[in-house]
Length: 441
Image (cartoon, rainbow, N blue to C red; front, side, top):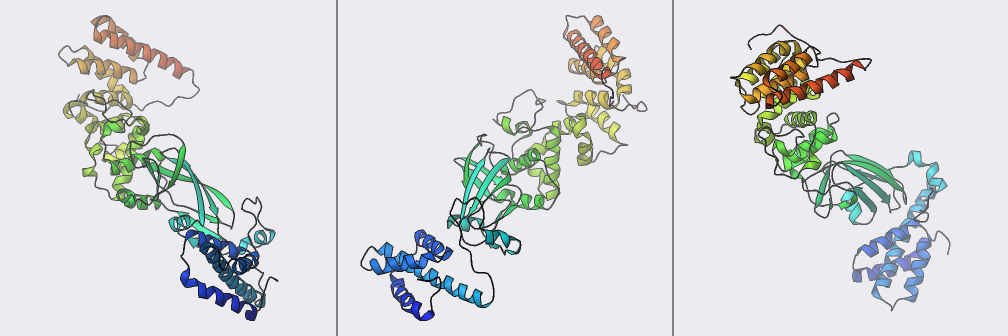
C-alpha cells in the first residue's frame, strides 16, 4: 500500500477501529504503540495486517492494531495537509541507537519548534528516558533521551528532588535541554544533600516525586542572584533542613574543647563558606534567629581572625574600618569567656605593632590566667615579625623550658623562625597591615 491513501479507502478501516475502541484498556504499552505508529508510515500496513489476521486473537494484539491504525490515519491526514501547503513531509526517526541525525532534520534544525515537556510527566510516560549518576552531595550527571517523534524542550528545575536509596539531593540550579527525536544529551546538574546522613560516593539516582518545601523559597531566591559556591549552598540547605549547630559545619575546633556529636565530616566547610551561607540566608529572608549556628559566639571571632573571611565578616556583622579596634578590645576584655583569648590572635595578625608591645607583657604577667599567657606567646608568632623571634626565645628562657609556657614559647619561636625563612625566599610578600595608634590595653 502507498504512503498515502484516499479518505474513502481509509474510512472503513478507521470505522472498524472506532467500533473496537470501547473495548480497549489504555495502558503504557498502547501509548508506546501509538507513538511508534506515528513515527513512520510502515505502522499503517503492519497494523492493518494485525487487525485482519487477529480479529479473533488476543485482545492485546487487537488493541495494538486499533491504536496503530488510528495513529497512522491521523499522521497521513497531517501529511496530506502539509503537502498541500508546500511544507516538507514529516521525517521518521531512525533506529533507536542512531549516532547521526537524519539529514532532513539536521538541515532544518535551526527552524525546529521545540515543544515544552513537563519533566516528571514525560519521564513517567516513557517519552523521556533519563540516566542519573551523582555523588550524594554537589554533583550529578543526567543523560536525557527523547523517545518521542517530537522535538522537546525539557527543564530540570531548581527544587527537583533526586533519590537513591535513603540518599536525597535537590537540584540547586535550573538546567534545560532541547532534544531532537531519538537523540540524547548529557547535562551537569548542581545539587545539594537534603540530609547530612547522605552516603557520599558515586551511584545511580532517579527522579523523585517528593518535594523540598523547606528550601524551595531559598532556591528560588538563589536562582535570581549571583553564583553561590557549592559549599556555601550546601551549608545553607542543611541549615534549613536539619538546623545543625556550628560544630557540625565548621572545620575549626570547638572553643569548649568538646567534639561534635554529629557525623558530618563530609559537610564541613571553610569559615569563609560559613559566612557566605549565612549572608545568603539573611538576604533571602530566612529567619536567622531560628538558625542555631548563628547563636554560637565562636563564629564571629573565628571569621574575623581568618584573613580570607575577615572582610566578609566585617560586612556581615556590621564592623566598620574605624570601629574594628573597638571590636578586638571588646572581645578581649568583655567577650565570651571561652573565646576571649582568641582576640590576641586577631590583634597579632592585623595590629602587629601593637602586638609586639603588648603581648610580651601579657605573657610575663604571673597574675594573668595561663590560657591568656600561652595564647600571648602563640600569637606573637602570628605577627610574622622578625623582632618577635628574640622575644619568644627570651620568654622561654625566663619561665623555663620545662614549663608549659616555656614549651609553648619555644614551639612558637621555632614556627616563626621557619615562617620567616619561607617568607624571605619569596619574591613578593603580602604582609599584614600594621597599626600602632590604638590604646586601651
